[in-house]
Image 1 (cartoon, one colour):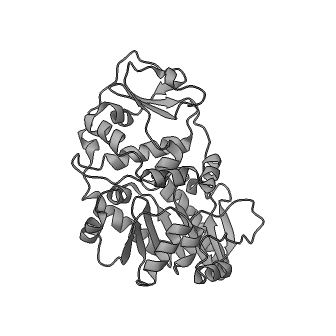
Image 2 (tube, helix red, strand yellow):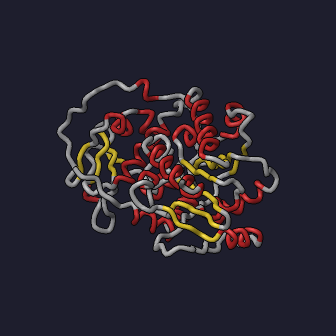
Image 3 (cartoon, one colour):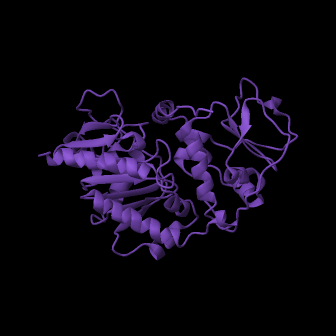
Amino acid sequence: MQSPKYKLSTRIKEYCAEIADNPDLVQGPGGNISWKDNNTLYIKASGKWLADAKKEEIFVSVDLLDLNEKISSKLFAEKARVIDQSDLRPSIETMLHALLPHKIVLHLHAVEILALLIRKNPFKDIKKFVDPSIKWIFVEYYKPGDILAEKISMQYQKRVDIDCIFLKNHGVVIGGDSIERVDWILKKLILVLKSNLYVFEKDIKNNTLKHDFSIPGYSLSGDRKLNLLATNRTLIKRLKEDWALYPDHIVFLGAQACIIEKDEDLSIYNKDHPYPCFIFVLGVGVYESESISKAQQAQLNCYFNVVSRQKPSEKLTSLNEIEVTDLLDWDAEKYRQNFSSVKIKK
């Protein structure tokens, strides 16, 4: 007979593959899951993909007692102590997973939830939509990692009954004693938000772009929805004004969108200013670099799905210049970028 430990790890890996198959729940290397077994915390390694949970070893085991001591001493910036022989790094959010008492902790950037959390005042909508059977807290935006963990710890001490944390401009954290409980909360949230969010995609017409415009090293996206980012007036406005909305988008796609007019001189992008992964040619479409990675493509799809769930009049909150710089200059995120640089075969 299989041991309970084996059953839980196997079930979690199956669940990872299941949710990772849905781009509205998981985008590339984004998202994380952990489980606790006595004095060990098993958590997804930095840069690894939930989608690969059944194909390769994506989890790292760390000393939970040591983490608890660090949390008690408010040493949130201390590194987790790895207790296996893995060369992988524990997730940036390891301290956050450790401080929650639940056996299983899931952290996702689910589109429907993210679409709510980037708004000016998501708290009132969460309070309005979320079922009272789900105990939750709302946390303002803080840089992922130790700063975020410390802020959550401060709030959690006042509400020890919570099993759901909404992170402004970031995502959701769900805790439970079983995969079934965690999945129930996630599905409950998605269901109610799906029925209450505007979806621009309903208005998309199946038009074929016809033009003679080309950029060396790039090709026009074959996704008609993505091309709307450069051809639809409402979405172009979002592109210009609401780009830096959440961490993974910035980390993989940069601080600003590269937006040009059809007749603009591309020579301004020289060797000191390399071409970005996407160029948004207004009135024409979205051009993808020949070296685009799967993670970058997943993030642009996520961006479209998030902004297309906003009414044109909806006010959004972007991360400020300091917050963006903190993410892009962070060694932990550069490490994750390098891990997720698998290119798309064309």
